[in-house]
Image (cartoon, rainbow, N blue to C red; front, side, top):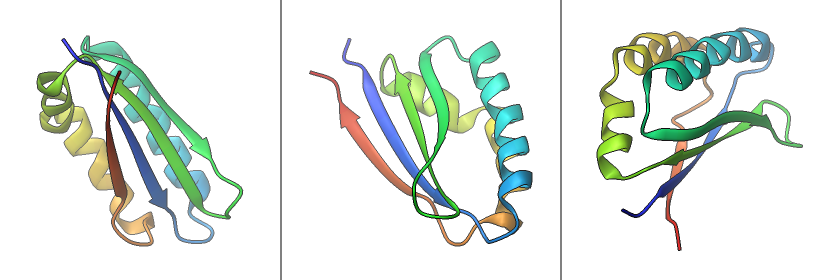
Length: 96
């Protein structure tokens, strides 16, 4: 089994940061409660205004797919749409 790391860079429109952070807190709670294949899922602010990084760690590719297919990811994630300043940049990493 080879763990998979994900770094998602998310840019949020000015003035929408609070809405985004509140919705992300709901998503993180659901991930932590309902995704046994996820061992780390946390939001970080960067030094660039409105730019965030989500650090994620999954047991394997099946756990990544389970996250992407989960109802909470799809439902809560749709709330982000009006607040984003473009599509997230996703970087996928293989643990060594």
